[in-house]
Structure formats: structure tokens, C-alpha cells
Image (cartoon, rainbow, N blue to C red; front, side, top):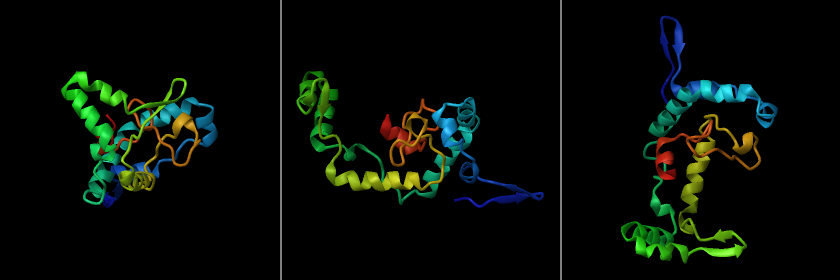
Length: 164
């Protein structure tokens, strides 16, 4: 992490330090979707974005690289084949099982790589950068918005590349 710099008696914080110093809206404000919550995320958008870049730079080499190796091999191969030849798309469909009307499941992640993904997400949770929990409240343990169109999303550049 970058050190705070003093210039003419003023302390200049790095983006990561600024993000960690932000005061999140209260749980109640998020639950009731107070206008101040929307303002908080919009006013701090660039600080948060820059903080995620700095966080990744600070952890370069120690962070797991998010790539398609996280996906189950059968799914990864079927998708790769379908992109190469759309006639092979049924191989992807065949991996999904309808477990209830309109509800499908498949082995999405490689079980042997889940520890790597969990470690990465634990690092994200410990980064100290504010994240907006799903639905504005913490309904699940350490939940976060993932999509870049959501306020307060997990904006680590490598994660966003993987997510897209």
C-alpha cells in the first residue's frame, strides 16, 4: 500500500487509503434505499475504482489469477467448442440438468479450484474497500454486487475481466 504523503503540511492519501476512510451509509439507510446511499456510491465512484486498481497492484503476485481454469473442465471445453463451432452448442446444454420445473443446475466451477476462488474473495472482503451488499443489506455473509452497472460493485480490474 502506498504511504500517505505530506505536502506543505497537508496529508495526501492514496486512493486505497481514501476508500478505507469512507464512512458507509447505515444499514437502515441502505435497507430503505435512502437517496443518500445513491449519492454516496456516485460521489465516491472514482475513489473506489482507483482503490481497487491500487489494491490489485499491491497484491500482484500474491493474488490468484482469475481465469477460465476456475470453470469445470467439461463446461469449459463444451463452451470453447461451441464458440468455435455453433453446431456443438448442444454439448453445453447437455451439461445442465433440470432439477425442478425451470430450474437447472450443472457443475460450474472446478471443485479443486474453489479454494483458490474463496481465497481471492476473502482477500476482497479484507481489502477494506467499501462494497455494496446485494439488495442494499447484508443478507448473506460478505455479499457484494459484482456487475459494473451496480453501485458499489467489486471493481477489481482483474475480477471484472473474469466476470465479463
